[in-house]
Image (cartoon, rainbow, N blue to C red):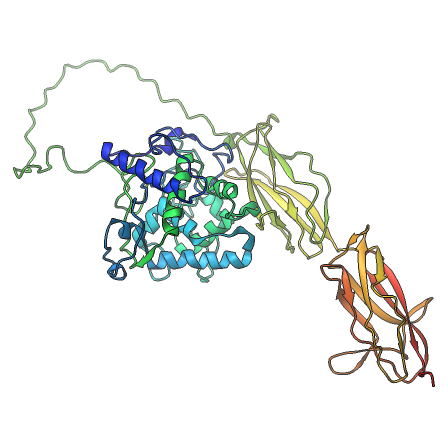
Length: 566
């Protein structure tokens, strides 16, 4: 990425001093991972972090707002609810009502689906502030959709990343290059797999703050990151926009919002001004570079005089000359993605795992030119397809990986779900129409190879009575606890006849009816399986209970029905 992504707009020595003090104050607090330069982060050539590939981010490393929080802590004033802030700190701390609601709903949702991530809504607010100024000051309708689309600059390689069109203009209206879209500024190729329906309307709209906030939350919680951990928090933010200055700006707002914020009416939020690409951040639906002023030169009335431009002297006609020969502009060099001709398997082994386990083998694909040369820095998307609940590490069914110097992209490890059977993982090149690769994978049922009773007491009962002890067994597989293993318990006729018995001990269903076969049983997390209470009919004798599991483990238990000793 171009180094200028980290550039900040400096409006003078006073502004620089205030920014430096702000960063110093915030760094002295509890903001994790904040780093400073001696100039208070006014580093004009911030380099991307090596932790995250610059070509693989939520925003395509698009420009962002660089305004820092005020030095004074946010303190809601009595007039805040009416949208009239009580001071600079209060104005900055106010978050438009619908936008704030979207952040908090996303936090609640992630707390249920990915509790180990520990996502704070204040992090979403910090990113929303830096990416779009809280949806342009809360310029959204009642459903949370922006009144006008928010689009980043064209990612055509001129001052920004070069990302050729991946969505046919469906999200950004551009069929040549991609642009970051919406209040959380997702590029189309990332939104395609990370998009979420946050407001329950059946659509995934990057211009809707509920959808975008929930998608951002899931994006930040990938790879089992725990955002209460400083290192994971840093990785997650840099994966969103790979710039050290971006990281520090987001962390500053995160700490500021953690100290307190309040709700302001939609449309009444404060708008940032400085942007990392040096453009103006005020006005307009698109946060990209602004066009030159349309006012004619000399027409600005700075001192109360006439606004009419001064007449220019008449142009003179130059003597006729032969125009110099011009060299047509050279065609731009193709991007690495445009040189890809096909995908090849990069040595992926057999993909098999037991339900609930992590696949030992990872999927790898290599991008190659027509001549078979490896192509680096190409985005490869891996998508899990079929009737399965298997996911990649981090809980997603889609993962996008950038090829390394050898042209190889390796997908995150697969985590098997509980559904057994086959499914496929499809690899495709993002932004290039070439044939994809399908990888077959299989999830097998959990197994046990041994069963043992947890007690050795004799199981006896008088005719017409009930057994005092319930049968409990423990399942193991290769000596380890076998949890979630399917099991069946049957009262059989004899050791060499597994037919269900028609007399002797029995189980009882919810309606009080006799049952002598229990199917669909499963061992618990500790490998234990406790059967329901057993009853006896009036027939005395010795009977057998046989328990079998997936994987071949079998245990036969003896039951005795006899009259009590006189």
